[in-house]
Length: 436
Length: 167
Figure (spheres, rainbow over the protein chains, first blue to last red):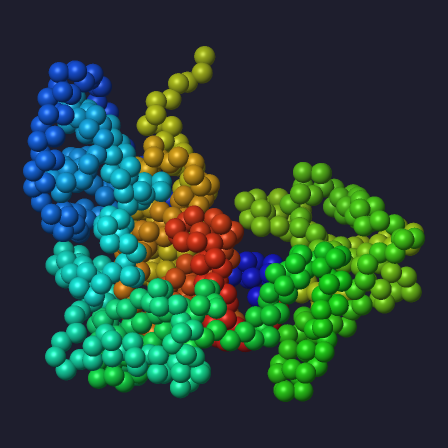
């Protein structure tokens, strides 16, 4: 089921079949258009004198730093709770956010801020300018910015905030955006184990269970939280407070380890170091990562045949492992490389492409919607053959049904010694075992 | 003589095109995230409205599809808002969502995907349903491509265990 090509076809097919789209909502588009439509206003020029006046006022305001950063954050979170993401606020509210930034002592482009206070700006102009000023300071790709992004500029990624900052943020979210949170960060109290104790419990657990020494962990990656959230192990929801710690090993920056510890020191849940298994290795082989080349090329299938999987599968089967049927089938094939007297792979592909396009009446443009799997097979016939499997590429999802239907999936076998077509037929098979 | 369109009309035409091209996929993806068709429809509507508002700020840093997916993902996150704090919600079943006629096999696959942790579900749906590549998903979610790759691998591990599928 999770073949490199099958996965997207399978999941797409299931989701398209099982989940509702908007086909039965004919008024959806018009409803959206109505909501975005608005009137535009006449533009006015900004006078030099006005700019100078605004610059002077803003300079004085900035010098006073009327509010703290924390107060600024709170105002922003409150407003976000009322009006959604900053880009959804009214132009006046977005301009007000700029003023709060100045009040908090943040230095901004003075000329732009001056223009922002020109009463002649249309709402659209004001909004665009305000967002430009805001996102110049708080980078937000393509206009998306939330208050957590704003706070992260000062405090860094949220995972690494202090317990106090996380609890403070939770408090604000509870007050102004209570519907938006799934868990609440707290501070440990009397009777709760401390953060240091929780960390020691974690290290002891990983040493006892996996033999991992403290020095093997990269402590700079550790993130800690103390939070109340809903847990459900199948016996019903339960509100629990836990220490949550995540950390990486120095030798593996891809996979984290983590624990959840109850306030009395009991381990609630843990996930240990990543253990590679043959399924992951097979996946890496099949997507070509461990082969160093794409699997479904002549060189890739040959590399697979030389990679030792036959013995590994035999060993796994001896341990009663169930092996993927497609992998077993691939191991029955003898993949090779073309010999000096064979037609070249490019020549064979030309023959196959011509055969497919003539059979299905396709143009060169049509043919680019295929992805072509290739191999060189030695023992299926008395002579070696080039194997070409024509599958619809991901780009075909943008075609309509009629166009897709023309791109029939095909299998072509070409005699490698003389270029004759051995097999040319459509196939609906989704795995190699069903094809050859 | 041709018709000259003002900027608002141009944006509305672009919005219409985006809706025609993406609304059904976005609806299904939002259903998978939010497990409620009414919420999902709200999310899709909100996504297109935000896209319209953000059009003037779209600098072409990413493809149009990646940009729109980013808006959709953030919209669903805002509605769900569990991305910033660790918690476990295991009471996730596809039965909450009324599925159209589905075989047991299809329900199993959909249920397995919908039961993934949220961050894994995001990458699985963007990769396998929306057809984005790792770099595009990285741009959409604002995380490193290596993080996307790791999440995909973890998701596949979980799905393998859930479904015991083969290649």
